Length: 522
Image (cartoon, rainbow, N blue to C red; front, side, top):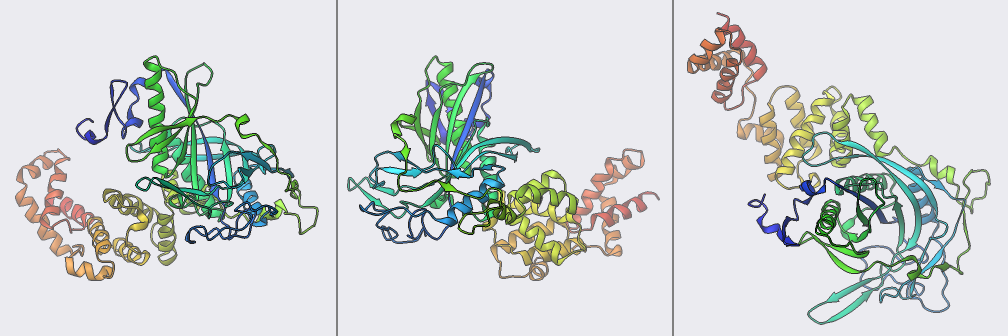
């Protein structure tokens, strides 16, 4: 490990730690149990802000999407955005929450330069929804089998975002952009039901799939549309939870797993060396792969919560019997919810006869799922398992080896249809199909037929040519032939391998096997 990870080695409490491989360091954790709870801030997909008509577009020039209310000009009042309420309810229903008929808005006071009012309008006493639950698959790198995890959602609340402070170290000054001030957010507060960074990352992946399916959040983490805070503590089995730290504003799914794994191991190192965990807020440094102290953790009293005097209680129709269009109907919103990721997985299993594992991978990688459905719509006779296995075991593997997201691969759906059609009709073999993926990514303007002809990738299936190759292989492998005829069946593979080598991996192996068995009987 030290040789491969030398650039990531750090020293902590006189002990050497590889921050990249912390999730694999299980030795010192035998007596410790980790506890993780997430708070997720998801920007609601809306054209205007939560309480004003200003744009929420990420591309607006600095300080141009700011209304007089966003800038806290005296005499301005908030007006609640109905679209945001509907999006919050739709998300709550998808997460099996109880939507409350009445919810309240509060002021949460804190003083930052990018918060002109000095307080944030949120829902602390009575949230939009409570008591949700989500069951999701956990995919752990290096482990072939995923497992399932259930986490409880304490509450889902609506709130406004603050602005953004821009710091220039060279000029020693800070500037403020208020475009984000008032942007609508859903805050999802989860119970501390998670144990590892991989479980937390898998939960966020599932939430992203749900949000995108519902259309309630773009989930563009690079634009700040989805931000994650993690509360982390450790304790010995059978004892109360330990002092927790909060890691703020983790900016990517990969960083979520890394940050939590690092923080768990940091706390274990401190406890094992007789230290004390501080109740503090930390940030994740993605470059050094470590959490960094920011400030002492705020407590509830620090925020001086008070009811928002300028907004009445938010009332919604939870039973659908009021027949008043000015009041949001929860049952009507429930009717608009499409099939969610878990239902899509079950559909892949039941309708397309796939196993649970490939169904999980296809749904988690939406591009692969789109490819899968597109190929089957165009080629209804092709085996579903052939398509799924090729997408997962070949296309995805090639992308991973190239350190490339599937979305960035330039192989199109039409390319894949042509590759799979040729593969199914045995015009090419699997090796040639993999070559085609690599070539098409480099030169996407070419067709599959062009590359097959140019690279001579067509599979050899002609019986006469196959027989010639088999006879040559038998001549080149006399010892293997002798062993096979003496009853050592494994020797057969050496002869098959020789045929593959002679044909430059282009011989149709099913035809080769039959012909060799026939020739070796004599």
